Length: 78
Image (tube, rainbow, N blue to C red; front, side, top):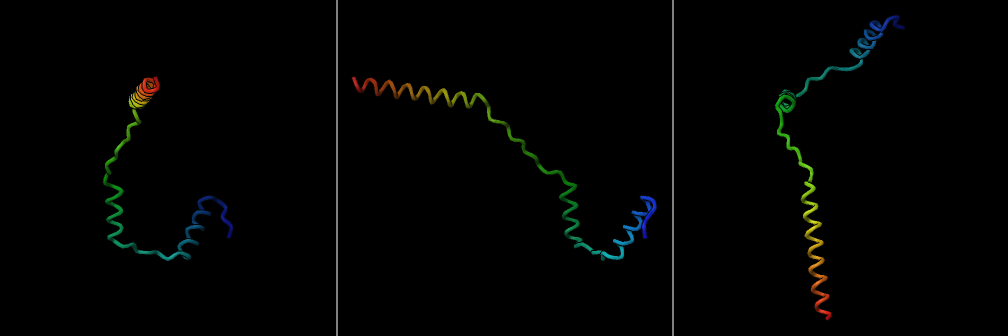
């Protein structure tokens, strides 16, 4: 049977599916839990991007510590 309109084609597909697939009854507990999870908003935590100042501070501390160590080793050699 070939359908002539899109509506008839959908009806044909629906009839084929109804005759092929058997209906199931999901567990009511599962459905209730799923409903609660879908309808209850969850807490969302947004992560803040790392601050540029933190990176600048770490680089500055590293450079300062390097200069201090370099000065100490230079004085130790003389």
